[in-house]
Image 1: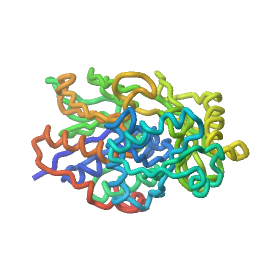
Image 2: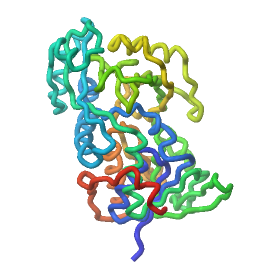
Image 3: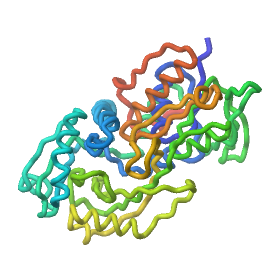
Image 4: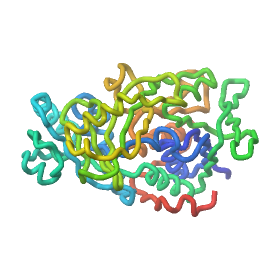
Length: 388
């Protein structure tokens, strides 16, 4: 008996995690990606393993998703995670006014926190501003974005998933009844074009999800929202430091290997394939980051980059929820054979994949439970050692 075949468009975090999930459920999986692995938003994330505390006051759905997945990722892929914990730090009266809401929100979101004194905070992180008024220890960590993606991809590949990189989807194949049967692709490596047929197509292109859906007259309410990050060439801290306040620009400083990264801004764009970096945003990261770590002003800039978040829901900018949604285009656009997953955070990639794979199985009448919560991932080093 032949296996069901699913094509996944996009080799970012969600597409790779979905490939891993479906391969474990017995699917033949083909991942098509117009560039390299995580060459879009996923490869440009700052790498924060969210505890959910950032969202605990105004977006508790996202907060709960983050703390649950934080716990799971620590178990199944510890080799790519710097475990933390992190700090939320108050430096002025406005931050202190946020304190009670923060405590309440974290309790309601089941996020364990511990308040410590300014002297204890400075003992943990001597380069913090001496203006610190209070601090909370939270279960934040960091992950290496490429290694996280490669660990999921290696695990998917070991179970038969095929990755076609530098292969761009030019068209979705439809029958006369409005059903998606597969994709027409352009292989950029040899300038050839061909078709791939499947039982289901998953659109996991993040901020580009609307463009893929439009190929069949579908709609996805995604808001491409870039954010600028600045990397510095040394570590003045040893754990993630967040501003104890509502999410804002430049209020996270985290560690990545031998660097620190300050992020991020939030604005909306129309053109996705070329997002300009505003020099004022770079200056703002330094200014805001220095309010937490004054020594940043004397630290050499390593690089500047931008990632475009695929936000969904009402509102604008930081008022948009950070949760995710899976769309069945049969229900929304009367186009069968196509599912879109978008929104969410890097931290929730596994949960997003689980929901997507559940929908694919339901649509195909397949009873195959998710096992990704308990299956340890292979080493990220294995991806290029395994045959495709």
